[in-house]
Image (tube, rainbow, N blue to C red; front, side, top):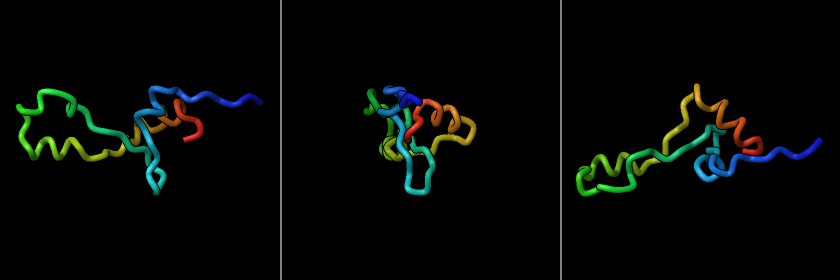
Length: 65
């Protein structure tokens, strides 16, 4: 049985937490940051959990995660 390949774009964006959930970064933290207040920038900096509906698709893209 051959090894399965990971989607490299997904491998750069997702990681597994200690409890086994898939984690992701939040969007909208790349540019025009002077227009966003400090509270919003701080909230966007935190790591988020991938929703339960999207987690199976991510696991298909990353078979060894």
